[in-house]
Image (cartoon, rainbow, N blue to C red):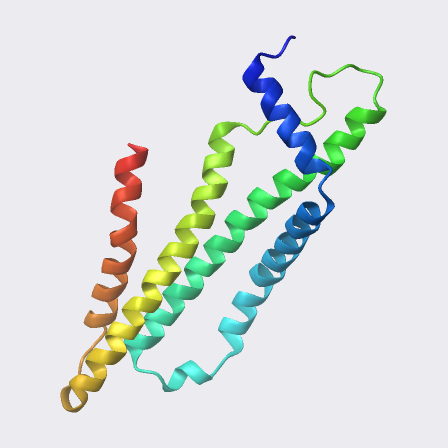
Length: 176
């Protein structure tokens, strides 16, 4: 099957990336760190005791932040494992194969590429917004120091919902 000019350009670009050793090492390191993070985040979260001294609102915001870092790790693993597989394994299999291919590096289905990137971006941005919400919650706790300790989780829940919806709403509108 013949490739059009756009597909040919994408194939050439993918071939250049697959031969760029620093780029491949960077992908490998990102993948390794994401896998380690995915494994250790729950372990650390379950075994740490420092946050038990925090107010329940601060603990909630911290756990929400960790959840979105976890989501970001999942997106990183998805994206980087697909790219590393395409650029190294599939390319080498196709190079040694007797079959003929238009391009040694297959393209990624758009839905899969968008899903992986959205997980990464959503995790990064939401965790950043949750840190900002945590700072605002701590500032509120400092200003209203006498009455804050009597508050329940309302401030933490509202802060979490606001931080996540601040980013989720435009994303949902763009997708639909």
